Structures are given as structure tokens and as C-alpha cells.
Length: 51
Image 1 (cartoon, rainbow, N blue to C red):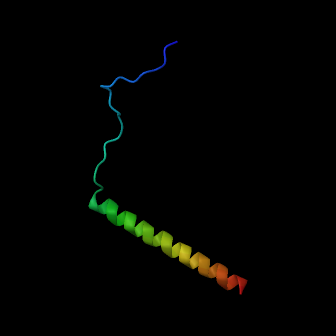
Image 2: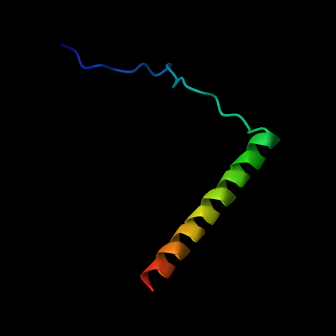
């Protein structure tokens, strides 16, 4: 069998990149803050419980 060759004219096809909407940026930032605060509260609770 012949090895599979990709033609030089074929291009990768996939999802096109787009800029996120402003509401998506705010939701991402809100999610980042929520995760960071949850990690901070959880690690503080673990430290207090061991003391």
C-alpha cells in the first residue's frame, strides 16, 4: 500500500477563531474570581482545621 500523503494544496479545516463578546469576557473574569476565592477559602479552612 502507498503511504498516505497530504496534498500541498489542502489546508487544515477547523473552527475559525473569533473574538469573544464583551459579555463572555466579563463572565470569564467573574468565573476566574469565583474560582480564586473558592480556592482561597478552601485552603484557609484546611489550614485552620489543622491548627
